[in-house]
Image (cartoon, rainbow over all chains, first blue to last red; front, side, top):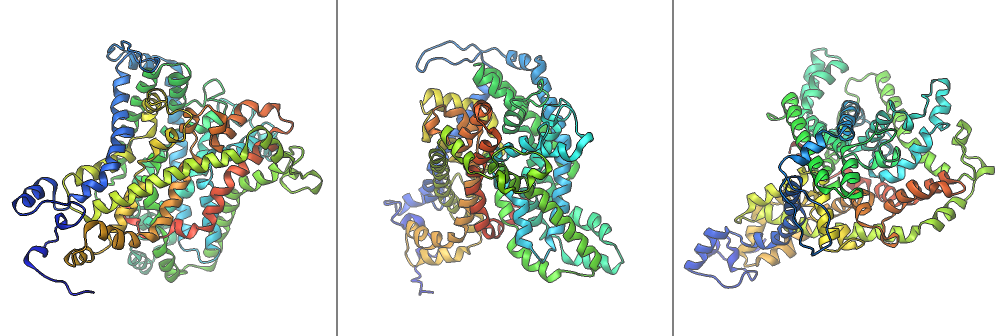
Length: 324
Length: 307
């Protein structure tokens, strides 16, 4: 592009000569390079972000663990109060509370329905969408729109659709469950799981579509030459080919399930009926903020995260995402 | 929530520019006509199921009397009214809610894009002490669920800093969303380093390089990042719900949810009013998405899928 004026010093670009960091030169420059790296500007550019990370991520993270091991309560700002270390007492209280245990069980039910449904439907739909030629945009938009819409907005329609004499029950007629879906102890959590599947599927389809581009076309051609059918190809080429994406989808779907709050809060009026659709995060809100026990809420949070990590680890082992 | 979900949003954007081209080339490879028709039938039926609640939302918001029979799913001129929009607007200030949502989303987008460009560039093209640690932190921010931080953040922001009922308090926890960092980093990684080296040899300062070379290069990624980041705060419920009690400061998602849980029963046609509010809340995100859906699915960040 332009004629570089090569001098011995500028062959290795040195940011210290730039106007960004005035000063420095000679031996001091090499000392600084050893301490700050070749381009100290990188640190300058990242400093504001890192400051924010410390403020709203690292500190609260430590704070969460601190709270869960202390008798923490809300006090007037500035008031000096004693918040003694209580060891595992908060965890004990959490684990002996049947309502909290039930909420963890509810998430288990949720995951058992939501995760397989999400993985299967998104992979099948992505595979089908991948080769679509006509109405491509329409189909994509149709599947993604629930994902970009606020839960709060679509919750209203679902309540309307699944209410006692809502459209779904009108269509089902005598097959409709009684009491209706969202106020039925058996059906409340599955209905929420289906809602969340519907809402998030577009995003997972997007992930799988990206992954499908990395599956070698030659494999399909070779399989076709060997006389493999479409179904066989799907299971022998597509499914293993997108395995890294499957690991990611499993993880994200699990995290979404663990973070469930808006849906039970709004769809089933705060985890009803009878706690059948409560979730740990909902209880964190109720215990921590409504009932003023942030230490208990923090302990629920810690247990929840440990649970997610264990699940993620098991999934990773089972799906074997390391090697590809 | 958005913090956790977004890691892969960047992966997601990677999908389909290359995809559409390639799949078009490979189409109908030995696929029978019947299979192809079956594919379209399945996809269209699926699409209709996916879209139906939205259609029903609009229809429901226009009904004078809620009609949950099967006939009610079709527009009936005798039962159409704009009354519900007036009703919901008299209970919650829709315009104010939209403005609040906009300020919240705008603040988050601004922070995310600024941090994203700067840190993304530093991570991809500069060598400095602490780069590895910073990158690890960016990933960690995405992995730790927001819910674990929710209670301490509430204590800090609402009680210690006194930022409850404050836009700043709403925005702060979302300012560090790493999605943009990862997308921009990926973008800058694809720029040959020789380009920057050449500029340095020409004597350009680092800041000038950032301004005149790096920034123009990521302009295509900007819209994708803005769209992706927009969805999070616009749809976010939990955090602004915790931190805003003052109705005039609540984003629309929060005020609509409060209406739904508290006051809906007192309205003449509660479902109509709720659905009208839902349409207003959903419309901006859906319209933006449809207008720019090309950007939502294209770009070349697919490598994010592989982690």
